[in-house]
Image (cartoon, rainbow, N blue to C red):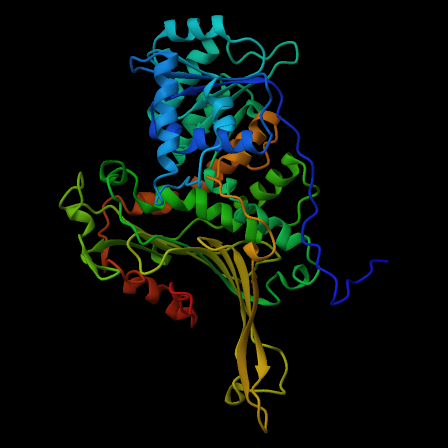
Length: 507
């Protein structure tokens, strides 16, 4: 029987689990000069060294079309990573760079100039790689297929004598259902599903991973996590920034493709999946895949697409999306999406899931809000102040949980008010700054695919949103002012259900 700590005893909040170094391997990065490599992969590798998770027998081979040398690439990345320590706005912003840790990474950097579509590039790679290898495609999506084709043709994906060969593919995994199927077929023609790691950095966030523990490691939550007690679920990923310098990319992508079938659906899986049979990677992925199959295809009449107009951001005037660089002045690309989804399962029958994401909104927050049904008791009524409660699972930029409870107001008579019970993870755990790729890179090295998506999950997600993609090809887009909570049509989406979105300012 467990002994309850007394009030005078410190609450034990951490049970460390030893995680040793990954096995020896060569990490081949296609796109060595790209922004992803400099801004995210190198900081993640540096953090893995600091944590003691990289083996001594580790090598990083960068491949790109730029003229460079081993020493030139090392010098470039050294300047870049030291620059992050001086830039408080950088995603990776350590107080200082540990020279020993960075030296470990720097000394293992080698560079090879090569055309991604030239057979000579792959002959050279085959001559310089032995044993375990991971091929990371930090390149534009148009190169995914050609690179994997040539890796396969050169025999670089053939696993022999216990040595693994793995491919890491960044999103986007296609741009609709048909292209996702084509890409998966092309990848699987050269490598087995177990060799392909489709990476979504969103799942590398500790805050997203913690949802699994919060739901299934707390007996107080699981009995109420179903249609009998939950009225609806809101999932939000809101940004205050615009498209910045990514107008050219965004014009061909839009908010739906960029955020919904990947990031938002991963949060949906964490919030709605059944308990997996175990924490083994395939058991977890099987459970997520089963949930995705149970989501009804999106209905265009239950979805809203918006585009930000000119407005105000923290007291500063900002331009409309159509006035951003590299954006068509007549663009109908959406920067905001809201939709209502239903899940066909005994747990969630009749419970709507409301998803929204957008740019240039009034607040930056990624969260899941669980709205509970009204209390079943007849002892109190609305006149006394009885209100239904909710649980807010804060994922970004703050990490924590807040739950509303009805409580008696002080004074004679019975008058109810709502109080908030909650916690911030930072109050209990030492949260180390990460870029979201550390866990994913390590898991790929050790062969743990739990946080990576399978082909059936990718295609299932695209099948859900494909009706919107088809319907929106020639559909208009509604405008909303920059700095607002989104278009009025998004509020109208919930109004027939007698519900309203949570405010983006958190109130």
